[in-house]
Length: 298
Image (cartoon, rainbow, N blue to C red):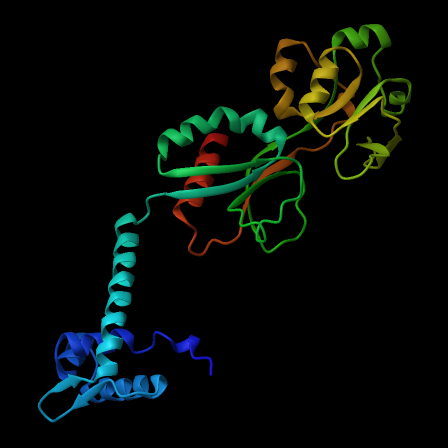
């Protein structure tokens, strides 16, 4: 018969009885009545199928089975107390390996510059970072937190917005001088386009129109890739037009090496979120990273 579910029931109580040489002393220490302690010892013996204690009105003594059980159970109880005391001594101090998954754009646009400060601040936290555009299985892969950009599907996971960013259509001044500047999304059909394509092939780009209707533009890109930095490098080299999150091309926009086009057809900003499984009993390492990202994004 499988007794795993109650394998440890009565173990602490039994060890306390033996260590204090009596049920009354153990009952007082544990906050129980002597009768309760006696019944629990009897239940333990019944589960084990052997007598552990010889009882008289004045004293108790261990049987041979009781001696074997006590010697082994005592070590288990002592180890359990040691683990508990270690956890209490750690308290809210972040420690251990933190697994996180973030998009390439977020890593190169923000996280890479922030990580040295986090590592300096939390020396007992080790990082395992998956930097990719794949759809990670947070629960199945044991990931502590995700960062995702854009609209989120319905989920039981907790999402906290870090900041908002906007998608822009951009080109280099040299490209626009050579090929002209599109004034309407429909004009893109006459240009070399560079498209971000990861989950399947993009067949069109969409833009909000002045009347609130969406404008859908069929595309046949010169280049498709799944890395925003490759897109940006090609656009900086004057090889075409692409769409990038503002967070990854702000420096180039400020320097004038990239130009935002189609300003009258800008998409609304989208959120950048940190996602985690639950607010309950959140590990200190995960809370530390969440608070760190929120602080850096403010």
